[in-house]
Length: 188
Image 1 (cartoon, rainbow, N blue to C red):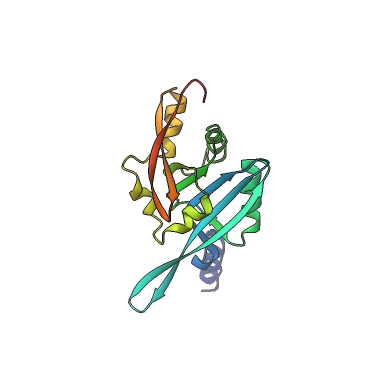
Image 2: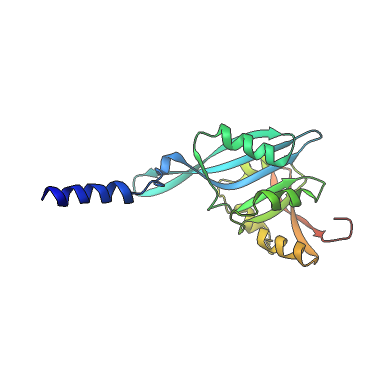
């Protein structure tokens, strides 16, 4: 019996789950905003926080912001400052306020091995205001008929094909689809 208990304890210690995370230790990121400024990038994470109330689950949002001299440094600083484990598996959109389409190359490098099923959307409005506009994290997806996933952008870049990326605009307290910009021109 002693031998059995010793083996059982050994197996439990050896094969126990070490990657277990409590839900309240996760920051479930639904949208990311990127503002390109003159000397730096500002990154904004939108975390969805589920709240159980009576017989339903409501959600609220929490925002994390940081900046860095390049995109990778801004992401690293933001991840370091966040006390929770950053969880991107529910990422819906990355909203970018930048005139420079080459920012997508930096995103390709940063998210190269991570998930890539999120959409890319450009805006000429302040990203923080765009993310805080709606209380539904899928609202941005519903604005655009033809969402472009990050995976499609990677494929188009590799094959040197043109692709249209949607642009949204916040004007007069109304968020709406504005136009498409082409990616893949010789200038990109």
